[in-house]
Image 1 (cartoon, one colour):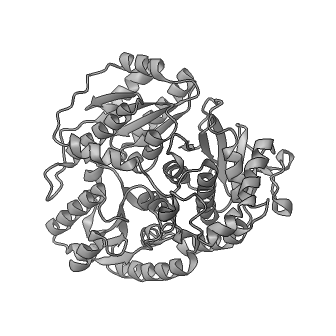
Image 2 (image 1 turned 135 degrees about the vertical axis):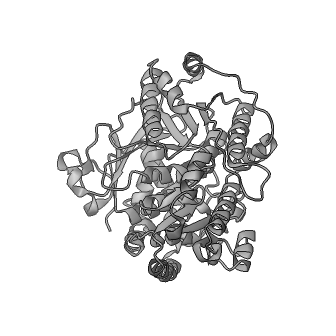
Image 3 (image 1 turned 90 degrees about the horizontal axis):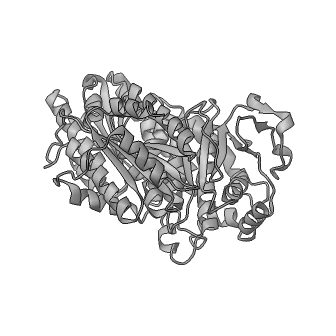
Length: 524
């Protein structure tokens, strides 16, 4: 499998970064599971997080087991699959299996839509590495109650993916559910080629064997300690310009699932965004043309060699395997590889960026702060003032920083296509008006993705929280709070943490988010 990274400028900074990786024999030591690569402080965590570098044999076994289960479901007339998971547990299957219904929201309307599907033909995969993810356990409780209400035994329709010895593994086994035990030495965001990525994708009909074969074929190039290693080239190229140029604008070319950008977002941002440093990818929709800034680097991804132009070749050091560069409207990098190769490539790139940035790529020290603030916010009255669209625009213009970015954090119904389109229009309008890159993240999904970067990375953002209140709430069986109350607490808790760290937050709570976004757009 050929992986091409093109558009690289061989500056002194690039050469130095690439040389650092080669001098450290980074790929050789990484795939030998050398936990000392990221320093003494990171060693304990890294020692139990490198199982993803040796994935093939275990993946084959999990695929075979999942295929047997898929056949059983097929024979029983079950053909609708819902995945309940957060962060790395949900985003890789979202990319690999487009037919999968992914529930990673606590907004009542989104939860209701998943629960109101045809349960007679539905199976649910509940994925949580820790076994204690509050959103996922809430979804589990809701589906258990829904299946019982429909006269269906939950044990026949709920499949659990979790680490061995987690509380979820114990309870699911005791209740007779099918349990897939994941490799405990793989972190959630590096789990695309493990049970977390495999099980829901196989059940939903994805060609996981083909994707695994692509990753296995790419492994040889990625383990080589040579200047032509595409992962080292890409990591070195991204590192050039840091810390000022810390934003990656990810542009799909249409030949791979566009949601691959969301997966790269969570992998890179959560792994590198700490100690005031980091790299923040911004997943853009197909055809998006944001205004470029000195803080951002454009990275296109795809796999279709017919989109290449031989006149645009630049030296990447990849020798005779190099291919022409992908043509885009933006100067930047192009990464060409099949989906399986992309998954492994970006995992290696992320580990290499951690080395270059001198951060532990396997921990997430600021995620717990938002969880604690959420617990404190449950049941507390909202103290947010009501803001008009004009006031929101004024605050954003007053607080956006030079060389910074804007993050739209939308606690709204992620199944509302009209609202999703309006948020993308708002992204483009803010980018044009403020001259800053703009990311869009659904809450609480982003808390398990870019949320670590927002709190632990460079303090150069202004956050626009859009919270869609609703009077049609959904209860969480066995819990004191409802989904709507949990969502409100998650938004308030994250805003409190951001504000406490001097990162400006503009919060809008509205029962008509689409109308509010359209009113904002009318001002641009």
